[in-house]
Image (cartoon, rainbow, N blue to C red; front, side):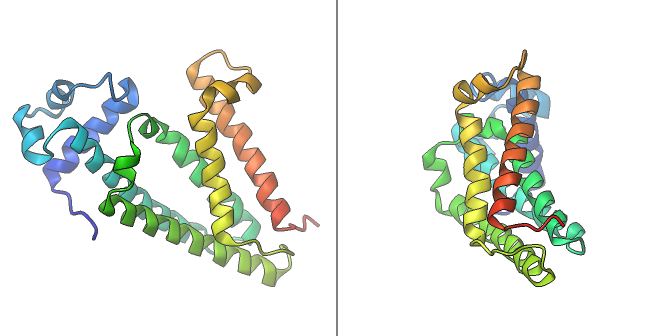
Amino acid sequence: MKKKFTDKQIKILDVAEELIAKKGFDGTSVRDICTKANINVAMISYYFGSKEKMMSYLYQYRVQRTKESFSEFAQTIKEGKPEMQMKEIINYIVSLLFKYSYFHGFVTQEIRTQDNVKDDLLEFYQICVARIDDIVKKGIVSGVFHNAPKSEDVLTMIIGSTLFVIRNRNFYELYIPATNEAQYMKEAEQKLRSSILLSVFALLDYDTD
């Protein structure tokens, strides 16, 4: 069942997310969040129970918002050519995971396997697979794709490759000549995006003629 968030909870979660994006989970205190949100420290306990429980709420909130934004985005490109749609879907998912890469610093397996979070993640994945499936079918019919890989496998490749790069920076940065954090993230995202595009279009046997 989709969790309903109150306006006050959303305000606190938005502030927490902003601070964690800048300072990291460990570098962001409850007092930091309360000061910026202009609330009493006791309100965190009232609305969430603890900082750790608030992170579970934050992750679920972000998944719900991502699911909604993806559905809206998919609608804006649905009339485009299948090869354009596939490229935009890949770019969207990769960019989204990089944008919220800081979640991987504090989102534990325990949070990801909570029933409410699992349900939201599953629904998001299913929405992505359905959209990819529609694009593949459209490409086969139009003749630009000559092979139809399983859409769930395409999504697994996109998300799995991106998460590997995010979680294994010490390996991936060996192949990216970046001098600072911002440059590394930009170069890593571009390199990975190009690699995934090549792999997916190869699987689709995309006809460029």
